[in-house]
Length: 109
Image 1: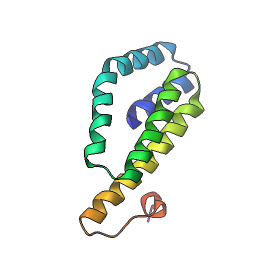
Image 2: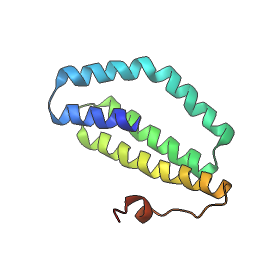
Image 3: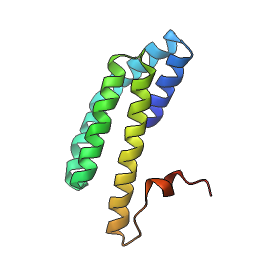
């Protein structure tokens, strides 16, 4: 979803209406599979992960409603990045690894 939203954001910024329409059609064809994947997360994910992913999916859905609003796609991408950090820390905790901070993830050193 993150890469999809980045492609959508780029198409909107370029004012490429054809690409925007193509991406919206692609989303419609993948929607059922993605919703199924989202339902399965409750089997394995922690509460914070479920909350973060639901928030990210809500932002993504809102961004897709108005594909001309670039900030909506950017907000959804940021929300997905936050969800990935929470998922990563869930997995790291399960494996007995040190937790990551947002600074760790964004570090260039």
